[in-house]
Image 1 (tube, rainbow, N blue to C red):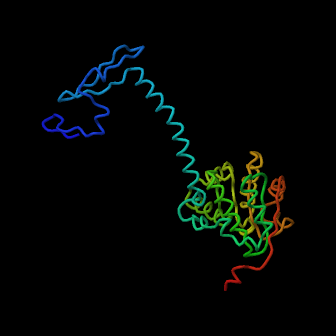
Image 2 (cartoon, rainbow, N blue to C red; image 1 turned 90 degrees about the horizontal axis):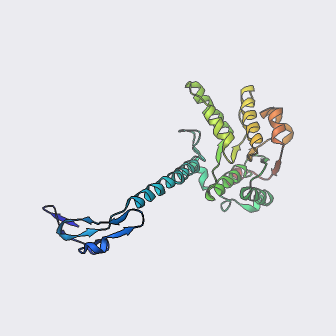
Image 3 (cartoon, rainbow, N blue to C red; image 1 turned 135 degrees about the horizontal axis):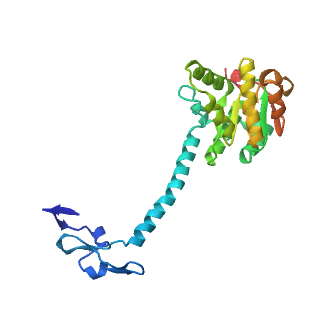
Length: 263
């Protein structure tokens, strides 16, 4: 709609649906507000005007949309954090490409089926253990990516990277407890290689906080390690291992290191 000297010189066809040169066509009666006169534009064009009732209804509709929109924004933010939640420099976005469809299922048919079943309905503590290069990390990432594709937030981290991120915050005099809070409260936490970090009382305490916090909330956990169950106490401590065993789903993966095969 173009203006010339404050008047409309042309009204496009799409706008004519909302305008009329007959004021009676744009005048209407509200049961509460009475007769509502139209807006009057230049060159004799008129448009329907909202009454006070309609204005209030529109304001209420917009207020009701805000929580829904906010919830969607929070959910989108959670979905984006799966591999980035530890902060800049500690991302693992390359794992987004590892899915069940890219996994060589014939190498680990039983583990493949059990992890996929857990991905559909995660309950308890899934534990993948076995030697190097048998697909533990790939299956954990596939699990995380399937949950994300279903709109279910989760957090993934290598245990080594988790402790590196915590140490970085400690070294910079920053509070690392927000990371622990996120890890405890996320709907699904995935920790890869929990027996890789060097053993220390501090690391065992962190493991205890994570596992105990999620156990008390009844939230599922998925982990991987090279060591078998009998040796886990040395890495995470007896108290954390005891809680981990509640609802444990142990899956042993064996076979040839596929990285060596490719070489």
